[in-house]
Image (cartoon, rainbow, N blue to C red; front, side, top):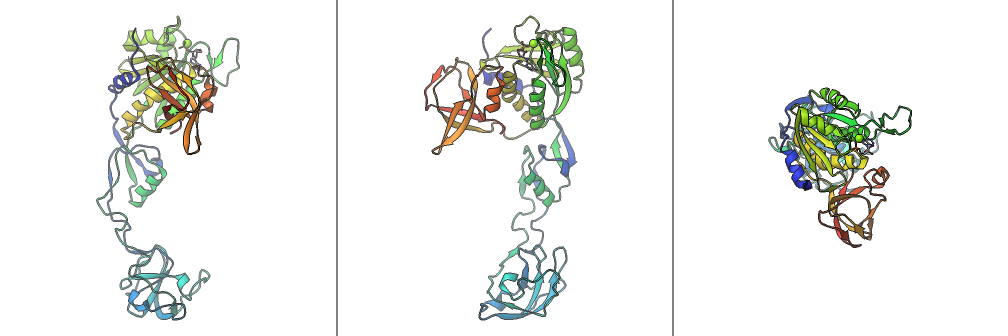
Length: 410
Ligand code: AMP
Ligand code: MG
């Protein structure tokens, strides 16, 4: 069977997925979720002219001659804390004590910070003075945050497809968006398979190993923003595989690992073929050559290769883009950069994803492989901070050659 290129396989897989429906959630639950609508500003920000300093609001024209040896004395007529409205209009010769964020009183057109007055270094609770001496001239508008100077009502603030970060939540709060329109989380049914697999809390016995992929894939699905339907570990019988897949009813995707190579006990493929639709591919890729794609009872199915590194890389290359598409995320390629090889390397002509550590040396990014590159060698993945992508057709590269790197955890 001929090998399919990574990009063709990805295109064919992506074509089977659509963006999911929109839902509305509370702002405090929205970090990491993906906006389903553009967010436009419903108001100007700041909402009202306010002071950016603790100081005195006054008429700039009154203090043009103020200096440390020529203080100007003004009558203090009001005290404006944050959250309260001014009660007086400021006339020439007058000032109001004002706190950071408090609304600017009418008539005032500048704020002089307390540090430039004789009211500096007063303890909280100090009563309002009758007069204040100003030691410095103020420009018109000094220390005033004008209404709408940051954001204008109607302005586009956050685009649909944006994955919400802490600062985005703050922005939404600033705009008074309590209910956030987001894409529903993809539901992914996750299955491991193999008679040799034990859950990590079981005692080891002869010939058995711990189930690794359930943990890595679950963590990657969570990080990508999915809800997980755990299907556990299927034994190497068609009945066990079928029983597990039956639990996937509401899933948007079934993701399994192992049981898709040419082994005598690889039943995943057989079950999908019988009860669903199978496109079984061998991909021109290392690691992760065997890949099963299809559907089980109309639910899309991706079967990754079983070795832990193959499953991990397969997730990054094929599953993460699918999740991003279902979520409607805008950014498709992330964390790619060009680096230089710190050592020569051999490849086998498949598109290869090699584990490497990238470090900066003399302003240059250099990449060193982290050790054994076998598809079961998870230790070299743990030590790596990037995957080097060696294109199909390349068999060897010299030290100093430039290659593409894909940063892990980006
Ligand atoms: P298979 O495709 O079922 O032949 O699996 C390929 C290799 O991956 C075998 O050595 C399996 O023991 C190993 N393997 C499969 N699934 C897992 C898993 N969930 N955790 C750790 N190793 C696995
Ligand atoms: Mg197996």
